[in-house]
Amino acid sequence: MNRTLSFSILTALIVFLIGPFLIIVAASLSAGDTLAFPPQGLSLRWIVKVFTVESFRDSFIMSMILAVGGTFVALLLGVPAAYALSRYKLPFGEAVSTVVTLPIIVPGIIVGLALLRYLVVPFSFSIGVALFLAHTALVLPYTVRVVSSSFNNLRSDMEEAAVLLGATRLGAFFMVVLPNIRAGILAAFILGFVTSFNQVPVSLFLSGPGVRTLPIDMLSYMETTYDPSVAALSALLALMSIGIVFLAERFLGFSRYV
Image (cartoon, rainbow, N blue to C red; front, side, top):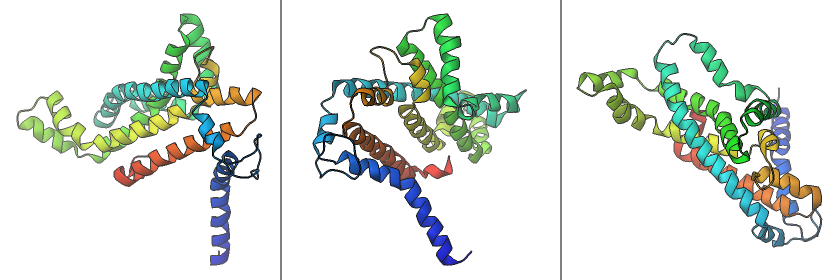
């Protein structure tokens, strides 16, 4: 493969990946009253309008609660699970690892329908509780996989040395193991946060009157209004996600864990 062809393929790939985002950014700066590309002049009024729509503010707060709270609970469950899977030869350990990663493998629509049918309906959970449980379950596989990578890269003899020096097993975990995998835990939190915040299929099944995540609220908004404010909000969210991932890669070496 010659250099020209390689460069052409790389350029086409970049355009394919970045092109939709650039179109959304351009549409969000349109001065027109309808969503269109190319933009009808340039204006910041739709970006300003995003902050004045009450439903966007409420759903943004809901998405933040679900993303932060769900990821935090997933870490509380995922860190011990990752430790057990990486440090001990558990019975059916491979099967457990497969089950834990199922929410990643199974399409989100199927997961959302299953949670609605077998969790929400039989137990009559409220919409908020159902969404919280669903987002926690979706983020859990990411936390287990990322933190497991950190445990696998950490020498086990460091923990054993702490135990030989008089620390309890639990004390060695908190004083030696956790400080050495904090970058992996933070990387898992960031990945889980972005995944939860941008989640659509599962939230679509579990949202209800007055309780909706921001992506679902954006879909509902587009059913009745076709102005560029949704494009403006999409651009802002994309920039937020890119910024979070960029900072994680810059300071944590994000690619080492995912």
